[in-house]
Image (cartoon, rainbow, N blue to C red):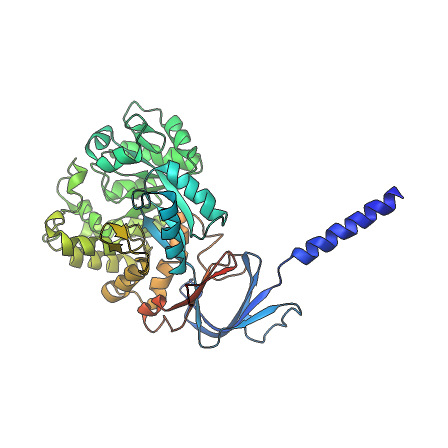
Length: 438
C-alpha cells in the first residue's frame, strides 16, 4: 500500500510538472539580425522555450512541436535585446518607485541589459536583485565597485554622494587605493558588494592599475576603467589587462608629451595637434585588438556636452572622437554602445520616461559618423555589449541556449539604423513587454 501511494504521488507530481511547463513559442517568418555581425536573414523561425532560445532555423526546415504556440512576424524584424554598456542610475531618481519607472521605460525601449559604471551599490544591489529575478519590469543590471587614488574622494562630490554614511574612501564600493593598501583585501571587499567588476577611475599610477587588475582577475572580477586614469595612460591600462576602457576622446592622452596628474582635465585633450592616427594611438589600437580590450566609446555624452557646455571639453573633441572610433573599428577593436547617462534622454532635471533610450542615438552615431554599417552598430549594442559585461554565454545574440531577450521591430534596421526605434514589442527572458497601446 505504501509503495502504491508513493507511485501515485510520483505520478501526480510528474503530471503537475508537465502541466506547468510552458508551451514552446515559435516566432515565424521574421527578418533576423542575430547580433553576430552576420547580414539580415529573411524567413526565419526562432523557438523560445521558457526563458531561453531553443532553436533558430529557416521557416519550414524543421517540424514545429505539436503543442507550440505560433506567432507570425511576417514583415517584422528581430534583433537581440540591446545593452547600454555605460549607465549611471543612482542619483537619477529620488526613490525606488521612480527607479522602477525608469527601468521599465528602458525595457520597453528595447534595452534588456545595463552596465552601471559607478554609483551607490547599496541601491544598485537591490535593483539588480529585483531586476535580474524579474521581480519588476527592467533590463538585467550589472554594476561596479569603484577604485581611485585618495585625492579623488576629496575632490569629487559624486563619490561623496554615492558613499554617504561611510568613511570617505572606505566604502567597499568606493575605495581609495594607495601604495599601502592591502589590495587583495580591497578587491575582496569590493566583490562582496555583488559587483561584476571594478572600475578604475582616476589618480592611480600604472603600477597600481596593474596590481589591482591582476588581483581582480584572480578573484573572478572583471576590470573596467577610464581610458586615461591619470597619471596612468591608456596604454598602461591595456597593458595591465583591463577588460574595457571607456571614452574615445581620452585616447588622445596616449600621444600627449606629458601626462597630467589631474583627472579633471580628462576631456580637455589636445584634439587640434594630436592626430587620431598618430603612431602612439595606432599602436594603442593594435594592442587593444590583440588583447581583446573593448572600447566603450560613449560618443553621445560628449556630443551633448560639446553642444551645451563647450568650454568643458577640448576644441575639436567630436571630429577627433569620431575619427579615432572609426580607426578603432577599422583596425578590429571591439566597440560597444554605451551612453554614460541614466539611459534615457533628460527632460529638465529628470529622465524623460516617454523618450526612447539613448543607446539608439549611440548606434546612430556609430553609423553616421564612424563608418559602421547598421548591422555592425547593432552588434556593438548586443554581442559586444555582452562581451563587455562578461555575459557572452548568456546574452547578446539570437542563438540556441541564449536568454530569450529580443526586440521586434516594424521596419528593417539593416537599411536604416534609426529603424531600431520602431519597436513593436520586447521579449526579456521569454516574457513579452509592450508599450501601452502597442
